[in-house]
Image (spheres, rainbow, N blue to C red):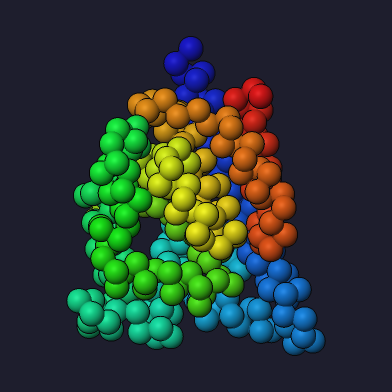
Length: 280
């Protein structure tokens, strides 16, 4: 029986890799088509591809559809993330202000991650007293300081046309592929991911924070928080007992009305799969 289960698991993993590779090709094409549609200019296809190359490097599309291995997929994601930070360094001079002077944007990003992981927000105990609630509401300001909060908000605003594909790349690499399990790189623990997913989905402070963000950014954060909560359920990490079902329904409604989402149909399919998984 164990031999049979191993064979089945291996076949399932191979099929998932094939489907993932096909999905990545389709989604890259969707990005270009969406940018072309939004630009409304005759030369929009060239501009769209140029924009994607400017931010995420080359190639925009993989050269061998359906033939990409896991290792090459990891390297491709790494290159896109590195290109994104290089773009920020060149275009925005991200690390040139305040205490982050002379730092590369990727170094600033790593320090932000480290600080957020070291000082997680409250989930269940948020409303135990007024002080706890107020501290949770000011969580990002207290943890990151005013300069870094303003920096993140500035990037979300100034680069809003590429925020969605960037978030997809970051999720795929840091969460779905777990940094490709490279021992040389620090990855975000499942526990830390769960704490912030719970913060955004299930606390007054997290919900209040999202209500102040752009609708697309708000919807994407909720969507990825739901995926992380599903992962926590699978791994037995949902120690706060957060019910995922109402959040799936809420995010599905949000996604359905956000016509500006590039990968809207992908999100809808994933959320409907979760509805079927949790049987509601």
